Image (cartoon, rainbow, N blue to C red; front, top):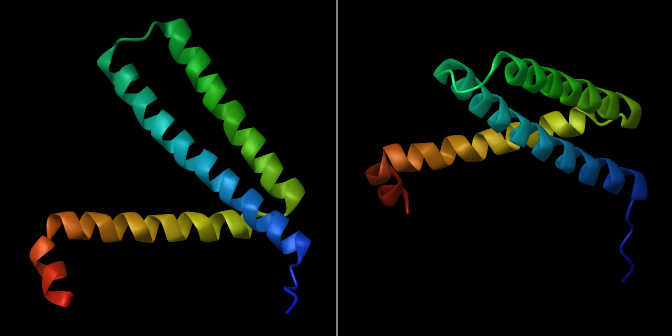
Length: 102
């Protein structure tokens, strides 16, 4: 039995997953940066550098998605991750509801 693997789809899927994970990390970095800015623990120069670094990362990710044609793959991965997080949060908030379903 031979398995037929479409290398192009595999490449897009893996690259889409990697970019989606980088976007998730970027979101966490952005939240942490906002906390530090609001907390006043950064100098004005550090705020400027941080803002520029986040904008540069935005541009790089957009360019990669456009060049590789993986925008839809990234969106699908992010949607799936969002659903998983929603499920985990729901289980944490309403554990009795989940134990009854089993």
